[in-house]
Amino acid sequence: MVVIVVIVTRVRETRIKWARNCGCSIRCWVQGKEIQSIGDKVGVGCMVGACHSCENCKNDLENYCPKSIFSYNATYYDQTRTYGGYSDVMVANERYVILMPENLPLDAAAPYCVLGSRTSPSKEKEAIQHLGADSFLISRNPDQMQAAMNTLDGIIDTVSAVHPLQPLFGLLKSHGKLILIGAPEKPLELPVLPLLMGRKLAAGSFTGGMKETQEMIDFAGKHNITADIEIIPMDYVNTAMDRLSRADVKYRFVIDIAKTLNIA
Amino acid sequence: MVVIVVIVTRVRETRIKWARNCGCSIRCWVQGKEIQSIGDKVGVGCMVGACHSCENCKNDLENYCPKSIFSYNATYYDQTRTYGGYSDVMVANERYVILMPENLPLDAAAPYCVLGSRTSPSKEKEAIQHLGADSFLISRNPDQMQAAMNTLDGIIDTVSAVHPLQPLFGLLKSHGKLILIGAPEKPLELPVLPLLMGRKLAAGSFTGGMKETQEMIDFAGKHNITADIEIIPMDYVNTAMDRLSRADVKYRFVIDIAKTLNIA
Figure (tube, rainbow over the protein chains, first blue to last red):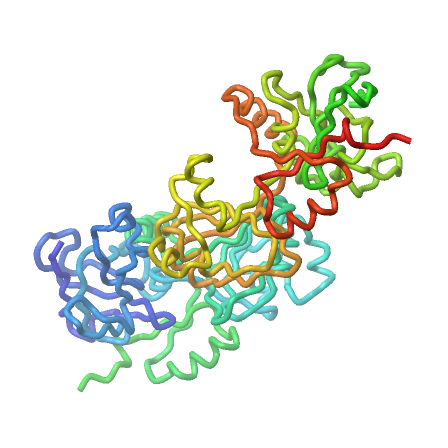
């Protein structure tokens, strides 16, 4: 697996998108084994490398390989630094290139290359009317929380700040699952009795492996599912980061690199 | 389900055993529907009642019924107090009566009606030579812990004291499972990143449902598996509790109620 996808399209034509400092979507030039062809719409997610020989890699779970290489802020095989989607040109091993369905716009599909979503209490109306949520529960509202006790089969917890888990376990039915995908800097408090008495669990999940990711993107293409995004220029990144920290985004920032990245 | 198992055998013949204040094994007298017959060896575990109409009860998981009634220190349907295995005579709904295999001695099988086990560093030789353990790892030994990093598929954590989970997650391979069956009084610290980066999980498990428990006991009977026990008289209970708190028991205390309980 030394085939390299080389991205050399002109910047104006390249649709490089970035979401939350780890994803990008790109037009590509393919050299070697042609899983992708010249002009295909492709994406690169969080990863650009792994050992390819461990049990996880053999099971298409490169994301759990202890030697996996992030596409940003990491050291590549050749000791160069990875910069993720902040680039106008990118070179990636074809294993880490996702083929994007032709029918999906690159900008609104870009967030699928990476993880998660954010919401906030102010988005209740939109969540129900626009996104089709059956219900909207605000975890800081004790009455709503009390009414929803023991009703949920599972919770996907995207919160990256330190937060109490006890109320979330309270929402779960017996045998319910709390899936953590946010990464708080400090450990969370794990109340053990609710786990024991309800056979509940707390599990973590990171980004998918490349096979899983391709399947997810293909599914999105088949059903024409795109993400709600807010397109921003490159020089808006710091403001976007501030807004992200306040959960003030519907629901993903995507940088239009092609139009706004200044090339020397 | 109103059929009642009445235990009225003479004390000298009754083999009532108790383990860690929640289990007992008894000879029984059966009234009504004869799932058990007079003279059968039976046991009662942690539970003696539940609602019998919720989803958990319908799925033979009375142990997770929110209205389940413990066999000790709880209030029964008729508002009387339950005393568990500290009694010479016991009345139980037949749903909560476990039929003990004829070939198993009641004392050495009694611990199976309840949960868990205890060990300590001093038991290494015995664990390997007598119990057939493949390996013995002391979690306070940093060298042993380091050598065992990322090698385990699962850990059953019986520790009831507050203890760090981070080293245990370190022992698990990707997708490994930490099953907590001890109940520390305070929350444990849950390091989230190891869960995320390794798709690991922490889950709780309580005693089994009656169906599961009967299956486990039948399995033990079929394969002639008994627990290692230390038989004690009733007046040794407080000493036993002190020893338990120091993990000084191989591996379960069982009280010989029949021989040592003083009847007024």
